[in-house]
Image (cartoon, rainbow, N blue to C red; front, side, top):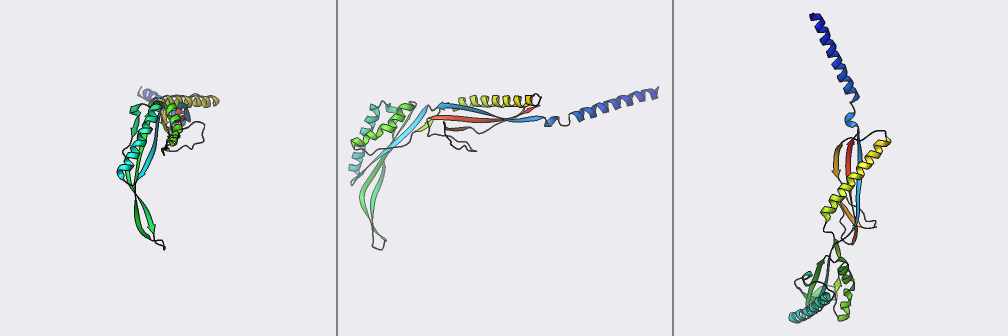
Length: 242
């Protein structure tokens, strides 16, 4: 009886061993049955915030005289902007920058002989931040009309931004993930396989460039502010089991 039981136990043990070896052999590469895909999320959009600035200056032998001339120009510029229907609280003038102006006098051998004081140079800037992008863009181009009034005003290039980047990024991550999943399913279908659960996911660099441009992308991320019309892209790297 004991020999009979021993034989049964040994048979069961042998059978279990064979099953384990078979399972291990069949699944020895199971962890390697994964597919790597990269999905792309892309969206064109228009900036909804613009920041524009410009500057003006005046010279004068006497500080008070130069200051009065600068203040006169400031009043004209303010009225010009208000007439263009820019809101009062959007017009921000900087503090006055005051510099002494000198002319260098040289010896015949090129050495500096003396510096002659010529008066004062006063500068001031004005900045506008607004959600009325098209209107402020137009003003930045037409502001040269101030030269007809004797004001030497220089206009900087407007800087364009988007205030809903967080929502945009979430939307694009979803789009990039879906794109990656579709790619994985297509590859698996072509290989007579099927994808299983997601094993790994990593978000790539978020980029914003000008629309229809050949602007270079950067490993650290590009954030274009010189174009009103922009294109945002993001990638998602996924791994699925097969």
